[in-house]
Length: 490
Image (cartoon, rainbow, N blue to C red; front, side):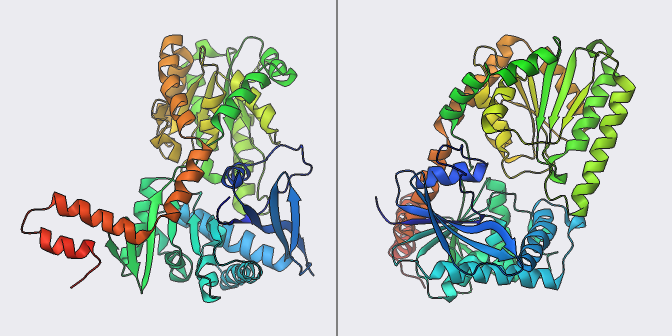
């Protein structure tokens, strides 16, 4: 089965039972990484206590091994609620104005990363491959190196990566963002995110070398774009069956013949929910003929409610929806249905399939798997229409969607009208190539692509790049190119 792969993330989602469905995009990704491979998933158990259990726990479930440990209440507040979600999340989403940096939180973030490294170092083998995920654990590679690890260590960022001038507003950016140079391979969702990281390294004194790599302070790090995906074929089958479920039928019947427009987002300021609701209001203002004929169902589970910015956006969204429903609604029709609860993967698949339009309109998003799930869930013979923000990573792949600027309220309203009035033929023409793309580029393709790149011999890649450059160069250039390809430098 090859070398053991250790997947490391902030939170480890252990299923409640062997038959419980996999929950969350990261859990689906880890399942794809470890399928038919020898490995385990390592990280925080999700439990906090003033006096946490110091022992590492090993759990086996559905042929996956989990390594779990607890955090203290202070660790959770400083590392997770503090620096990770009050500083790194807003900055990496281009929202410098929302960061709330404190030295105590920065210290807690580093302390927890050291704790991850201490726990992980106790059972790393020489030939293990370590794959670290997301912004919570950026310094972990450096901490493992400091403990003597010579393993291949990769990192993947699931959220956006902002340009250097934004990143440098973080007071300790060299210690946190600069620590990514200690990984062998740093992966991003898009080429734009990858290039922003490269530009950041250059501002810190790095130089770009062959094979998509940078050298800085004696370190060599390779970078790449690896757009994360979904289990397309499985999800498509799930939606086909779920579309006939009692819930999906109940949702459809409750509309009384109205068309269904769907939004599914975690309650977060990056998702553009207020802008989407304002665009729906503008659509109703401009198109009275659609009154009583269309309903927006906004499914928005709450998250991080203890953080002020999240409670503020909840209040804003609730107020907007109440105003619109009061203005346009009547006894027989509620324009916007707002639901603050989570649905199972199966239930959501059925609702996706029932929706005539999906509005996926984040202000900034690393990928946004809702867009991909919606496309996969559609009936190919009678598909719905995806309205997608150009600032979501998914827009680089799902380019047959109606791409919009979420800040342009009139433009989003116009796109919604176009989506609702689109012919079946145009809907099929738009949907088919997107579904074909997702079938070919599914979550397994993502995992295999990243791991094969991490496992490539960087010296061989450099030699291959040099040989290509040799044959592409002029006769006068070839002697020096040949020396480079062989590993010599002046």
